[in-house]
Length: 232
Image (cartoon, rainbow, N blue to C red; front, side, top):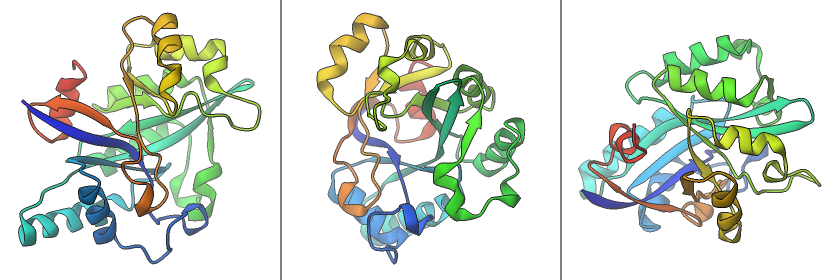
């Protein structure tokens, strides 16, 4: 077993209008920023897209060959799900060997035609579905799904304040709840006993990568190792 620092929610320069770092930020810069932050595993989770992941995978591979410093890169996406007056942001991580095909399948199952989406539309895209159903679809594709920044306010709304949060955090297809403020941990543990709580950066720039992270013991730095660490 190896103790690793993980950041399971980050964004790339794929959508320049949604990125807080320099728009010319390279995949190599992202890899170097993650390693400088002490991370051993980085999930790339752009808004409803996996199209930038391969750039960071390749940059990590080349960096490891050149320097010996390795970074495991996991493909994923942030999916905004609207249900009535509630909204949940789900982080879907997918098996690296088939993530593009599986994400296409997930999008089709959610009635989203990716070919019609302009890149600037991705951050605002909301799927109309029950988030528990979306989590089950991710799990059915062999993926891992956790709730993103459950305690973050969007205007006056916060998922943590809703009844939907308790239902979603109790869903067996949800592997963890991501919190921004550790002070909310006790409340979540009281409301959903046994839930796994993690922290991630939600980085939109290299400087933000690893600003919040999770430390886990993994058998290996990989998707399979993370799945086992989550008890799957």
